[in-house]
Length: 230
Image (cartoon, rainbow, N blue to C red; front, side):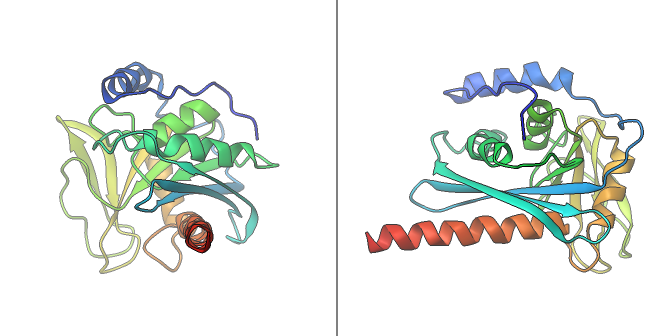
């Protein structure tokens, strides 16, 4: 898979914040015409305490949720841990994994924030801008404020930051904690939430995220085992 634009990797937090502020105005929160997603890819990363990071991307058939293709990339984390800048710890390996794909998915689902971010430019926005693909973020934790959605599957509640709607809490399973959905690029919020519900048929997290999470953690364990043996 080819990336549509070149990625920038700032060396320090100040430069990373400046980049996010420049990129935020490029994010397109509207649907492609038509929003026809036949293949969907999940992206996730895993770390250890020694600076190793593994990124995984898994493409699923949208109707069957069966895997079509996957790829991983590993490396060392070089960017410091700073809330709001976690994308810069994951982007190098995430993009490397995407470039290994032999096919291009119709939709990317990131394990992280999109516009539900202090500068409206989380991981999903940056991945979407670099790839040019419709992209959304599904986060486990809330950034912003929202009312608790209803207890039934499909219930939602808007997430706001500074009075602006930036995402939506979505109850993907009745009686469980919601996930937090936001636009990454080239998709509307209503469509993003509908896609997340379609991908969560049996679990709280989308099947895309679950598959990518399992793959990156498996590869990371293998790396740690090899390092321990060495």
